[in-house]
Length: 294
Ligand SMILES: Cc1cc2nc3c(=O)[nH]c(=O)nc-3n(C[C@H](O)[C@H](O)[C@H](O)COP(=O)(O)OP(=O)(O)OC[C@H]3O[C@@H](n4cnc5c(N)ncnc54)[C@H](O)[C@@H]3O)c2cc1C
Image (tube, rainbow, N blue to C red; front, top):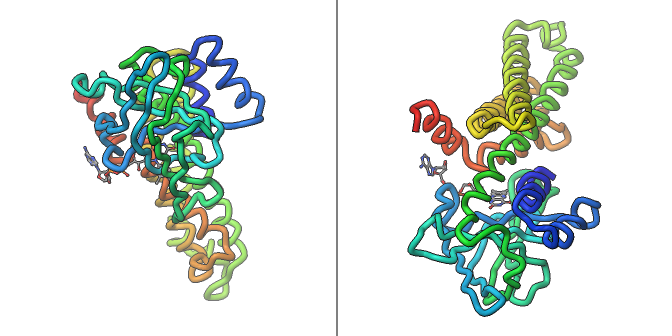
């Protein structure tokens, strides 16, 4: 839902005209369909400026050719927000956004990935094989696509921070319950100081992640700049989710490693929060740029 709301609906709402909102947003806002966000390519992940998918104008259409990698809900979504090059010479200033409808001729879901975690959500490779898209489906002006994508990701990162926070909070809850009931050396393991330290560190990091996430969301709601705040929230919450889920397994001992116990799934789900919508390394680049003043 984070991708649907922040990376699809928000840009269509902000940059779409009335006809586009009616056609591409209304069915999604009313819960009848959902949308996906197709920026990543086989050779353009962290470096999203390196787009190879082309959109060539042909009368009142554009012809799209290229492939998009790792697209959340790529198989299920009725609409894809697709970023393409319309003017290679302008590099990232030549990137343009289009809404492409599932089933458009030349739009193929080429592969659905088998992955470590978040297995309830499909992750697909999309191919555009001379896919004709009406010019009326272009979102914003030619060359505005990179700005649209980056603005969407600023908001989306708050959603991923919240996702990471939820994963971490759930894992802590389970670790606490287990520490109360499991006994070793004649006492509940929660009475051993080293287990208490793990739980204290987990709870403290979660509160830090919660405050950073709420702060970024509050800045966004207030209409103030929030790009750095959302990068900080996403970075800290994702790192927290990974550390907390690792320790939640530790508190569970051998049982934590077994699928029957929910912390194993939390650990696998946490990992993606360090990767998508900008890896932790990319969040640090965003934050450092602000800290250094440019
Ligand atoms: C399950 C899943 C769902 C996804 N959903 C979507 C989606 O819906 N839409 C979409 O467009 N994309 C999606 N992605 C793609 C995701 O955003 C990218 O995988 C991510 O941005 C990293 O790009 P990459 O995989 O090409 O890694 P690369 O960019 O090749 O990076 C590899 C490693 O190098 C590091 N690195 C790269 N450049 C730098 C640098 N300048 N400084 C320091 N370190 C660097 C990275 O941090 C990483 O550790 C999804 C990915 C997955 C796995």
